[in-house]
Image 1 (cartoon, rainbow, N blue to C red):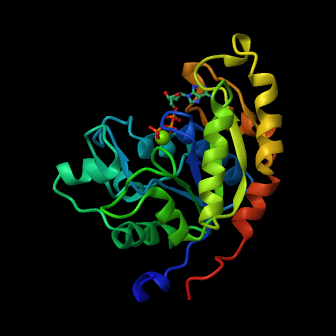
Image 2 (image 1 turned 90 degrees about the horizontal axis):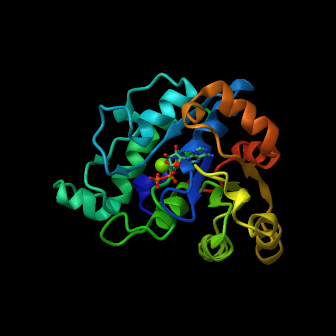
Length: 252
Ligand SMILES: Nc1ncnc2c1ncn2[C@@H]1O[C@H](COP(=O)(O)OP(=O)(O)OP(=O)(O)O)[C@@H](O)[C@H]1O
Ligand SMILES: [Mg+2]
C-alpha cells in the first residue's frame, strides 16, 4: 500500500455481487435508505460504472440517489462513468482514461469525508478487471471494508456465491453476510431450488444469509419508502449495523 493511500480512512460496507444484474443497486439503495431512516449519516458511492452516460437518470449512481433521497451530484457519487457496456478497465481505456486504484480511492475519500459511513456498490463481481493489474477485489482489500454479497435466489446461485466467498476469504476481506435477491421475477414460483439455496449456502460457506429480498413491482423498486419497508420485513440488519460500526482495521 502506498504512503498516500495508507493515510486514507474509509468506513462502511462494500456491496458486491455474484454477477452483474443480480440486484446490487436495488439492495444497496434499500440498505442505505433503511439505515438513513434510523438516523445514520450514510452516503453511497459507486467507484466506477459502465454502460450508460450520466444524465438520463438510469445510471446506478443516479438510481442510488433517487432511491435514497441523498442530495449529491451523480458525478460526485460516481466520478468514473464510462458509456460502453464493458468491464471497467476496458470501458475506461476506450474512453481514454487509465483507471488506477489510487485515483479511485481519492474520489471515494472526497465523498467519504461528508458522511459517517458509506455503502459502496461494486461493478459486476469480485473478479472484474478494474485497472491494468487490479480487480474489484483489490479495491475492496484497499478500502478495508467488510463485504456484503448480493446473490440471486434461484438455480446456479450456490456455485457463484461459494466462489465469491472463497475469493473474499483468500484476500482476508470480512463478510458481513449474504442477501439473496429474487430480482425482477417471482422466481420462487417456478424454481424449486429457491427453497434450499440459502440454507445450503450457509452450510457450505459458514456465512450468514441475512434475508431474501422479494421481487418488487417495476413501479416501486426505486421508491424509498417501499425499499425501507421491504428491508425491515426481510433483512436482518444487525450484522450490517455492526459492520458499519467497525473502525477501519488499518490504513495508518
Ligand atoms: N428485488 C427486485 N425487484 C424488482 N426488480 C429488481 C429487483 N432486484 C433487481 N431488480 C431489477 O433487475 C435489474 C438488475 O438489478 P440491479 O441493477 O440492481 O443489478 P446490479 O447487480 O446492480 O447490476 P450492475 O452489475 O449493472 O450494477 C434492474 O432493472 C432492477 O431494477
Ligand atoms: Mg448496479
